[in-house]
Length: 370
Ligand SMILES: *[C@@H]1O[C@H](CO)[C@@H](O)[C@H](O)[C@H]1NC(C)=O
Ligand SMILES: *[C@@H]1O[C@H](CO)[C@@H](O)[C@H](O)[C@H]1NC(C)=O
Ligand SMILES: *[C@@H]1O[C@H](CO)[C@@H](O)[C@H](O)[C@H]1NC(C)=O
Ligand SMILES: *[C@@H]1O[C@H](CO)[C@@H](O)[C@H](O)[C@H]1NC(C)=O
Ligand SMILES: *[C@@H]1O[C@H](CO)[C@@H](O)[C@H](O)[C@H]1NC(C)=O
Image (cartoon, rainbow, N blue to C red; front, side, top):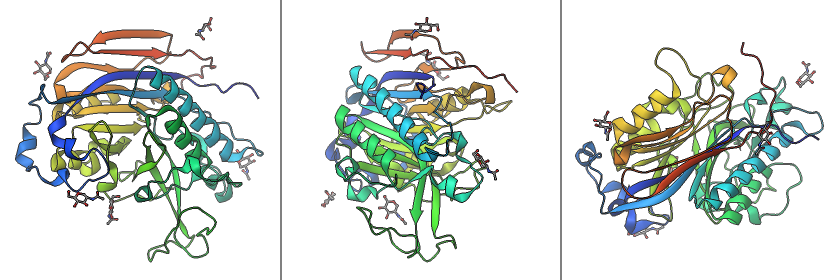
Protein backbone atom coordinates (compact mmCIF):
# COMPACT_ATOMS: atom_id res chain seq x y z
CA UNK A 1 0.00 0.00 0.00
CA UNK A 2 1.15 3.49 -0.70
CA UNK A 3 1.45 5.84 2.17
CA UNK A 4 -1.82 7.48 3.04
CA UNK A 5 -2.31 10.71 1.24
CA UNK A 6 -3.56 13.46 3.39
CA UNK A 7 -2.96 17.02 4.30
CA UNK A 8 -2.54 18.19 7.76
CA UNK A 9 -2.51 21.46 9.53
CA UNK A 10 -2.25 21.85 13.25
CA UNK A 11 -2.79 25.04 15.14
CA UNK A 12 -2.01 25.69 18.71
CA UNK A 13 -2.81 28.51 20.94
CA UNK A 14 -2.70 29.21 24.57
CA UNK A 15 -6.19 29.77 25.81
CA UNK A 16 -7.34 31.19 29.05
CA UNK A 17 -10.07 30.23 31.38
CA UNK A 18 -11.49 31.66 34.51
CA UNK A 19 -10.17 29.48 37.28
CA UNK A 20 -12.81 30.58 39.75
CA UNK A 21 -15.58 28.98 37.86
CA UNK A 22 -14.33 25.47 37.81
CA UNK A 23 -11.47 25.01 40.18
CA UNK A 24 -13.52 23.25 42.83
CA UNK A 25 -14.20 20.32 40.61
CA UNK A 26 -11.56 19.64 38.14
CA UNK A 27 -12.57 16.03 38.03
CA UNK A 28 -15.83 14.49 37.02
CA UNK A 29 -18.43 16.31 39.00
CA UNK A 30 -20.61 18.41 36.76
CA UNK A 31 -23.34 19.11 39.22
CA UNK A 32 -21.42 21.34 41.58
CA UNK A 33 -20.34 24.39 39.70
CA UNK A 34 -22.44 24.28 36.63
CA UNK A 35 -25.56 25.40 38.40
CA UNK A 36 -24.48 28.18 40.64
CA UNK A 37 -24.24 31.08 38.26
CA UNK A 38 -27.13 33.22 37.22
CA UNK A 39 -27.60 33.90 33.52
CA UNK A 40 -27.13 37.64 34.14
CA UNK A 41 -23.55 37.11 35.10
CA UNK A 42 -22.83 35.57 31.77
CA UNK A 43 -24.01 38.60 29.90
CA UNK A 44 -20.74 40.11 31.04
CA UNK A 45 -18.69 37.17 30.03
CA UNK A 46 -16.30 39.41 28.14
CA UNK A 47 -14.93 40.86 31.33
CA UNK A 48 -11.85 38.72 31.15
CA UNK A 49 -10.43 38.06 34.56
CA UNK A 50 -6.72 38.16 34.04
CA UNK A 51 -5.74 37.35 37.60
CA UNK A 52 -7.69 34.15 37.73
CA UNK A 53 -7.02 32.87 34.31
CA UNK A 54 -6.07 29.33 33.50
CA UNK A 55 -3.69 28.68 30.68
CA UNK A 56 -3.84 25.69 28.43
CA UNK A 57 -2.57 24.82 25.01
CA UNK A 58 -5.21 23.83 22.50
CA UNK A 59 -4.51 22.27 19.11
CA UNK A 60 -6.84 21.78 16.19
CA UNK A 61 -6.10 19.49 13.31
CA UNK A 62 -7.21 20.08 9.76
CA UNK A 63 -6.69 17.29 7.29
CA UNK A 64 -8.17 15.31 4.48
CA UNK A 65 -9.01 11.84 5.76
CA UNK A 66 -8.06 8.68 3.91
CA UNK A 67 -11.15 7.56 2.03
CA UNK A 68 -10.45 4.65 -0.29
CA UNK A 69 -12.95 1.83 -0.20
CA UNK A 70 -11.66 -1.68 -0.78
CA UNK A 71 -13.54 -4.97 -0.59
CA UNK A 72 -10.92 -6.46 1.75
CA UNK A 73 -10.48 -3.47 4.02
CA UNK A 74 -14.06 -2.18 3.88
CA UNK A 75 -14.86 0.80 6.05
CA UNK A 76 -12.77 -0.68 8.85
CA UNK A 77 -9.56 0.11 7.06
CA UNK A 78 -10.65 3.71 6.60
CA UNK A 79 -11.43 4.00 10.32
CA UNK A 80 -8.16 2.35 11.29
CA UNK A 81 -5.98 4.56 9.09
CA UNK A 82 -7.64 7.81 10.04
CA UNK A 83 -7.67 7.13 13.77
CA UNK A 84 -3.95 6.31 13.54
CA UNK A 85 -3.39 9.57 11.71
CA UNK A 86 -5.19 11.49 14.43
CA UNK A 87 -3.02 9.80 17.04
CA UNK A 88 0.10 10.61 15.08
CA UNK A 89 -0.79 14.27 15.19
CA UNK A 90 -1.81 14.10 18.83
CA UNK A 91 1.76 12.97 19.41
CA UNK A 92 3.10 15.99 17.53
CA UNK A 93 0.77 18.26 19.40
CA UNK A 94 1.99 16.81 22.68
CA UNK A 95 5.51 17.59 21.65
CA UNK A 96 4.44 21.23 21.71
CA UNK A 97 2.81 20.77 25.11
CA UNK A 98 -0.76 20.75 23.89
CA UNK A 99 -3.32 19.68 26.47
CA UNK A 100 -6.09 18.97 24.02
CA UNK A 101 -6.39 18.29 20.31
CA UNK A 102 -9.58 18.40 18.26
CA UNK A 103 -10.10 16.38 15.06
CA UNK A 104 -12.61 17.20 12.31
CA UNK A 105 -16.16 16.03 11.73
CA UNK A 106 -16.10 12.80 9.71
CA UNK A 107 -12.37 12.79 10.42
CA UNK A 108 -12.43 9.08 11.25
CA UNK A 109 -14.90 7.60 8.76
CA UNK A 110 -14.37 10.24 6.00
CA UNK A 111 -17.05 11.71 3.77
CA UNK A 112 -17.10 8.61 1.64
CA UNK A 113 -18.92 6.27 3.98
CA UNK A 114 -22.21 6.46 2.15
CA UNK A 115 -22.02 3.11 0.45
CA UNK A 116 -24.70 1.50 -1.55
CA UNK A 117 -25.72 -1.15 0.93
CA UNK A 118 -26.31 -1.33 4.63
CA UNK A 119 -23.72 -3.96 5.30
CA UNK A 120 -20.98 -1.83 3.74
CA UNK A 121 -22.22 1.29 5.42
CA UNK A 122 -22.11 -0.31 8.85
CA UNK A 123 -18.42 -1.08 8.44
CA UNK A 124 -17.86 2.69 8.78
CA UNK A 125 -19.48 2.78 12.24
CA UNK A 126 -18.21 2.07 15.75
CA UNK A 127 -19.58 1.29 19.17
CA UNK A 128 -18.81 4.01 21.71
CA UNK A 129 -19.00 3.19 25.44
CA UNK A 130 -21.19 5.22 27.77
CA UNK A 131 -18.95 7.97 29.22
CA UNK A 132 -20.33 7.38 32.72
CA UNK A 133 -18.33 4.12 32.70
CA UNK A 134 -15.07 6.05 32.20
CA UNK A 135 -13.92 3.07 30.19
CA UNK A 136 -10.32 2.94 29.01
CA UNK A 137 -10.96 1.07 25.79
CA UNK A 138 -7.20 0.69 25.35
CA UNK A 139 -7.28 -1.86 28.18
CA UNK A 140 -9.86 -4.05 26.47
CA UNK A 141 -9.02 -7.26 24.70
CA UNK A 142 -8.34 -7.20 21.02
CA UNK A 143 -11.70 -7.52 19.38
CA UNK A 144 -11.92 -9.54 16.20
CA UNK A 145 -14.72 -7.83 14.31
CA UNK A 146 -13.66 -4.19 14.28
CA UNK A 147 -16.46 -3.18 16.60
CA UNK A 148 -14.45 -0.57 18.45
CA UNK A 149 -11.03 -0.69 16.90
CA UNK A 150 -10.88 3.02 16.07
CA UNK A 151 -12.04 3.89 19.58
CA UNK A 152 -9.32 1.69 20.95
CA UNK A 153 -6.63 3.29 18.77
CA UNK A 154 -7.72 6.76 19.90
CA UNK A 155 -7.91 5.67 23.53
CA UNK A 156 -4.39 4.23 23.40
CA UNK A 157 -3.19 7.39 21.65
CA UNK A 158 -4.52 9.73 24.31
CA UNK A 159 -3.13 7.50 27.04
CA UNK A 160 0.32 7.20 25.48
CA UNK A 161 0.57 10.94 24.90
CA UNK A 162 -1.34 12.07 27.98
CA UNK A 163 -3.46 14.42 25.94
CA UNK A 164 -7.19 14.98 25.56
CA UNK A 165 -8.41 13.91 22.13
CA UNK A 166 -11.74 15.02 20.70
CA UNK A 167 -12.64 12.94 17.64
CA UNK A 168 -15.77 12.60 15.54
CA UNK A 169 -17.16 9.44 13.99
CA UNK A 170 -20.29 7.54 13.01
CA UNK A 171 -21.60 5.79 16.11
CA UNK A 172 -23.57 2.55 16.12
CA UNK A 173 -26.02 2.14 19.01
CA UNK A 174 -27.98 -1.11 19.07
CA UNK A 175 -31.39 -0.95 20.77
CA UNK A 176 -33.17 -4.25 20.06
CA UNK A 177 -32.57 -7.59 21.69
CA UNK A 178 -31.52 -9.04 18.38
CA UNK A 179 -28.90 -6.37 17.68
CA UNK A 180 -27.42 -6.01 21.14
CA UNK A 181 -24.09 -7.76 21.19
CA UNK A 182 -23.52 -9.48 24.53
CA UNK A 183 -19.84 -10.00 23.88
CA UNK A 184 -19.02 -6.29 24.18
CA UNK A 185 -17.24 -5.18 27.34
CA UNK A 186 -20.11 -2.78 28.05
CA UNK A 187 -23.90 -3.15 27.93
CA UNK A 188 -26.65 -1.64 25.83
CA UNK A 189 -30.33 -1.40 26.83
CA UNK A 190 -33.31 -2.38 24.76
CA UNK A 191 -35.17 0.85 23.93
CA UNK A 192 -38.87 1.38 23.38
CA UNK A 193 -38.46 3.75 20.47
CA UNK A 194 -35.99 1.46 18.73
CA UNK A 195 -36.43 1.53 14.95
CA UNK A 196 -37.27 -1.65 13.08
CA UNK A 197 -33.69 -2.20 11.97
CA UNK A 198 -32.68 -2.44 15.64
CA UNK A 199 -30.13 0.36 15.91
CA UNK A 200 -29.44 4.07 15.70
CA UNK A 201 -26.54 5.76 13.91
CA UNK A 202 -25.33 9.07 15.29
CA UNK A 203 -22.85 11.71 14.21
CA UNK A 204 -20.83 11.65 17.42
CA UNK A 205 -17.98 13.54 19.04
CA UNK A 206 -16.04 11.34 21.46
CA UNK A 207 -13.67 12.73 24.08
CA UNK A 208 -10.77 10.78 25.60
CA UNK A 209 -8.98 12.05 28.67
CA UNK A 210 -5.26 11.77 29.31
CA UNK A 211 -5.71 8.28 30.68
CA UNK A 212 -7.48 7.09 27.55
CA UNK A 213 -10.94 6.98 29.16
CA UNK A 214 -14.01 7.92 27.14
CA UNK A 215 -15.36 10.87 29.14
CA UNK A 216 -17.89 12.38 26.74
CA UNK A 217 -20.03 11.22 23.83
CA UNK A 218 -22.00 14.00 22.18
CA UNK A 219 -24.47 13.15 19.41
CA UNK A 220 -25.01 15.94 16.89
CA UNK A 221 -28.40 17.56 17.24
CA UNK A 222 -28.65 19.82 14.22
CA UNK A 223 -27.98 17.58 11.27
CA UNK A 224 -27.34 19.13 7.88
CA UNK A 225 -28.78 16.91 5.16
CA UNK A 226 -27.58 13.74 6.88
CA UNK A 227 -30.47 11.31 6.55
CA UNK A 228 -28.49 8.32 7.79
CA UNK A 229 -28.07 9.80 11.24
CA UNK A 230 -30.52 10.18 14.07
CA UNK A 231 -30.19 13.52 15.86
CA UNK A 232 -29.19 13.54 19.53
CA UNK A 233 -31.11 15.64 22.05
CA UNK A 234 -29.04 16.10 25.18
CA UNK A 235 -27.03 19.25 25.90
CA UNK A 236 -25.43 17.85 29.04
CA UNK A 237 -23.72 15.11 27.13
CA UNK A 238 -21.79 17.85 25.30
CA UNK A 239 -20.07 19.01 28.49
CA UNK A 240 -16.81 17.75 29.91
CA UNK A 241 -14.38 19.06 32.50
CA UNK A 242 -10.64 18.70 32.15
CA UNK A 243 -7.84 18.25 34.67
CA UNK A 244 -6.68 21.76 33.82
CA UNK A 245 -9.87 23.13 35.36
CA UNK A 246 -11.57 24.10 32.16
CA UNK A 247 -15.09 22.98 31.28
CA UNK A 248 -15.77 22.62 27.59
CA UNK A 249 -18.91 22.27 25.61
CA UNK A 250 -18.77 20.30 22.39
CA UNK A 251 -20.57 21.13 19.18
CA UNK A 252 -20.55 19.78 15.66
CA UNK A 253 -20.68 21.92 12.51
CA UNK A 254 -24.23 23.18 11.89
CA UNK A 255 -24.86 23.21 15.66
CA UNK A 256 -22.99 26.52 15.71
CA UNK A 257 -25.95 28.39 14.24
CA UNK A 258 -28.43 26.80 16.67
CA UNK A 259 -29.24 27.24 20.31
CA UNK A 260 -28.32 23.68 21.29
CA UNK A 261 -25.91 22.57 22.61
CA UNK A 262 -23.05 25.12 22.52
CA UNK A 263 -24.89 28.41 22.81
CA UNK A 264 -27.20 27.01 25.50
CA UNK A 265 -24.35 25.57 27.56
CA UNK A 266 -22.47 28.86 27.38
CA UNK A 267 -25.50 30.87 28.44
CA UNK A 268 -26.79 28.48 31.04
CA UNK A 269 -23.59 27.33 32.71
CA UNK A 270 -21.08 30.04 31.91
CA UNK A 271 -18.89 27.71 29.93
CA UNK A 272 -16.16 29.66 28.12
CA UNK A 273 -14.49 27.07 25.95
CA UNK A 274 -16.02 25.33 22.96
CA UNK A 275 -14.50 22.34 21.13
CA UNK A 276 -15.97 22.05 17.67
CA UNK A 277 -15.51 19.45 14.95
CA UNK A 278 -16.75 20.44 11.55
CA UNK A 279 -16.87 19.59 7.87
CA UNK A 280 -18.05 23.05 6.99
CA UNK A 281 -19.46 23.89 3.57
CA UNK A 282 -18.71 27.48 2.74
CA UNK A 283 -21.88 29.00 1.35
CA UNK A 284 -22.30 32.52 0.02
CA UNK A 285 -23.01 35.13 1.13
CA UNK A 286 -22.58 34.72 4.86
CA UNK A 287 -21.98 31.09 5.79
CA UNK A 288 -18.24 31.19 5.43
CA UNK A 289 -16.42 29.26 8.11
CA UNK A 290 -14.19 32.04 9.40
CA UNK A 291 -16.95 34.65 9.70
CA UNK A 292 -19.34 32.34 11.51
CA UNK A 293 -16.66 31.02 13.85
CA UNK A 294 -15.12 34.37 14.64
CA UNK A 295 -18.58 35.83 15.19
CA UNK A 296 -19.54 33.06 17.59
CA UNK A 297 -16.35 33.48 19.58
CA UNK A 298 -16.48 37.26 19.82
CA UNK A 299 -20.20 37.56 20.20
CA UNK A 300 -20.40 35.08 23.06
CA UNK A 301 -17.01 35.92 24.51
CA UNK A 302 -15.78 32.33 24.43
CA UNK A 303 -12.70 30.51 23.24
CA UNK A 304 -13.65 28.48 20.18
CA UNK A 305 -11.37 25.69 18.99
CA UNK A 306 -12.47 24.49 15.57
CA UNK A 307 -11.15 21.57 13.60
CA UNK A 308 -12.31 21.34 10.00
CA UNK A 309 -12.28 18.74 7.24
CA UNK A 310 -9.92 19.70 4.44
CA UNK A 311 -11.47 19.36 0.98
CA UNK A 312 -11.22 22.81 -0.55
CA UNK A 313 -12.52 21.83 -3.97
CA UNK A 314 -15.92 21.26 -2.34
CA UNK A 315 -15.68 24.29 -0.09
CA UNK A 316 -14.66 22.34 3.02
CA UNK A 317 -11.78 24.01 4.81
CA UNK A 318 -10.94 26.35 7.60
CA UNK A 319 -9.93 25.57 11.14
CA UNK A 320 -9.00 27.97 13.83
CA UNK A 321 -8.60 29.04 17.40
CA UNK A 322 -10.62 32.09 18.33
CA UNK A 323 -9.94 33.59 21.72
CA UNK A 324 -13.09 35.55 22.31
CA UNK A 325 -12.99 35.03 26.05
CA UNK A 326 -9.92 37.20 26.33
CA UNK A 327 -11.35 39.56 23.70
CA UNK A 328 -8.17 38.75 21.92
CA UNK A 329 -8.87 39.47 18.29
CA UNK A 330 -5.73 37.84 16.98
CA UNK A 331 -7.44 34.60 16.16
CA UNK A 332 -5.61 31.98 14.23
CA UNK A 333 -7.49 30.85 11.19
CA UNK A 334 -6.54 28.64 8.24
CA UNK A 335 -7.90 29.29 4.80
CA UNK A 336 -4.94 28.09 2.81
CA UNK A 337 -6.15 25.62 0.26
CA UNK A 338 -2.65 24.53 -0.65
CA UNK A 339 -1.08 24.02 2.75
CA UNK A 340 2.55 24.68 2.30
CA UNK A 341 5.11 24.21 5.00
CA UNK A 342 4.51 26.92 7.49
CA UNK A 343 5.50 27.76 11.00
CA UNK A 344 4.37 31.01 12.49
CA UNK A 345 4.47 32.30 15.99
CA UNK A 346 3.01 35.27 17.72
CA UNK A 347 2.33 36.58 21.16
CA UNK A 348 -1.06 36.22 22.81
CA UNK A 349 -2.79 39.30 24.11
CA UNK A 350 -2.61 38.49 27.78
CA UNK A 351 0.80 37.11 28.51
CA UNK A 352 4.12 36.37 27.01
CA UNK A 353 2.81 33.06 25.83
CA UNK A 354 3.10 31.97 22.26
CA UNK A 355 1.15 30.45 19.51
CA UNK A 356 2.23 28.90 16.29
CA UNK A 357 1.07 26.82 13.43
CA UNK A 358 2.78 24.23 11.37
CA UNK A 359 1.67 22.31 8.40
CA UNK A 360 2.92 19.30 6.56
CA UNK A 361 2.90 19.23 2.83
CA UNK A 362 2.30 15.55 2.21
CA UNK A 363 1.71 14.91 -1.42
CA UNK A 364 -1.73 14.82 -2.84
CA UNK A 365 -2.93 15.01 -6.38
CA UNK A 366 -5.08 18.05 -6.50
CA UNK A 367 -8.49 17.40 -7.88
CA UNK A 368 -10.01 19.87 -10.25
CA UNK A 369 -12.64 22.18 -8.91
CA UNK A 370 -16.08 21.23 -10.14
C1 LIG B 1 -20.41 15.85 43.30
O1 LIG B 1 -20.40 16.94 44.18
C2 LIG B 1 -21.36 16.87 45.18
C3 LIG B 1 -21.34 18.19 45.95
O2 LIG B 1 -20.02 18.50 46.37
C4 LIG B 1 -21.08 15.67 46.08
O3 LIG B 1 -22.06 15.55 47.07
C5 LIG B 1 -21.10 14.41 45.21
O4 LIG B 1 -20.75 13.30 45.98
C6 LIG B 1 -20.14 14.55 44.05
N1 LIG B 1 -20.31 13.43 43.14
C7 LIG B 1 -19.28 12.75 42.68
C8 LIG B 1 -19.62 11.66 41.73
O5 LIG B 1 -18.13 13.01 42.98
C1 LIG C 1 -21.37 -0.71 -4.36
O1 LIG C 1 -20.23 0.06 -4.05
C2 LIG C 1 -19.01 -0.61 -4.20
C3 LIG C 1 -17.93 0.30 -3.71
O2 LIG C 1 -18.01 1.56 -4.33
C4 LIG C 1 -18.84 -1.01 -5.67
O3 LIG C 1 -17.63 -1.74 -5.76
C5 LIG C 1 -20.00 -1.88 -6.08
O4 LIG C 1 -19.91 -2.17 -7.45
C6 LIG C 1 -21.32 -1.19 -5.81
N1 LIG C 1 -22.39 -2.10 -6.06
C7 LIG C 1 -23.48 -1.74 -6.73
C8 LIG C 1 -24.51 -2.80 -6.89
O5 LIG C 1 -23.62 -0.63 -7.19
C1 LIG D 1 -28.03 13.60 29.30
O1 LIG D 1 -26.62 13.41 29.42
C2 LIG D 1 -26.15 13.40 30.76
C3 LIG D 1 -24.65 13.37 30.71
O2 LIG D 1 -24.20 12.31 29.93
C4 LIG D 1 -26.76 12.23 31.50
O3 LIG D 1 -26.32 12.23 32.83
C5 LIG D 1 -28.27 12.36 31.46
O4 LIG D 1 -28.86 11.21 32.04
C6 LIG D 1 -28.77 12.49 30.02
N1 LIG D 1 -30.19 12.79 30.03
C7 LIG D 1 -31.04 12.08 29.31
C8 LIG D 1 -32.47 12.52 29.39
O5 LIG D 1 -30.71 11.14 28.63
C1 LIG E 1 -11.50 43.51 19.12
O1 LIG E 1 -12.77 43.47 18.49
C2 LIG E 1 -13.76 44.21 19.16
C3 LIG E 1 -15.08 43.94 18.48
O2 LIG E 1 -14.98 44.09 17.10
C4 LIG E 1 -13.37 45.70 19.15
O3 LIG E 1 -14.34 46.45 19.84
C5 LIG E 1 -12.04 45.84 19.84
O4 LIG E 1 -11.60 47.19 19.75
C6 LIG E 1 -10.99 44.94 19.21
N1 LIG E 1 -9.79 44.98 20.02
C7 LIG E 1 -8.61 45.15 19.49
C8 LIG E 1 -7.47 45.15 20.47
O5 LIG E 1 -8.42 45.30 18.31
C1 LIG F 1 7.35 19.58 0.78
O1 LIG F 1 7.09 19.42 -0.61
C2 LIG F 1 8.21 19.63 -1.45
C3 LIG F 1 7.73 19.54 -2.89
O2 LIG F 1 6.99 18.39 -3.09
C4 LIG F 1 9.31 18.64 -1.10
O3 LIG F 1 10.45 18.88 -1.89
C5 LIG F 1 9.67 18.79 0.35
O4 LIG F 1 10.64 17.80 0.72
C6 LIG F 1 8.44 18.62 1.23
N1 LIG F 1 8.78 18.85 2.61
C7 LIG F 1 8.46 17.99 3.54
C8 LIG F 1 8.89 18.35 4.93
O5 LIG F 1 7.87 16.95 3.33
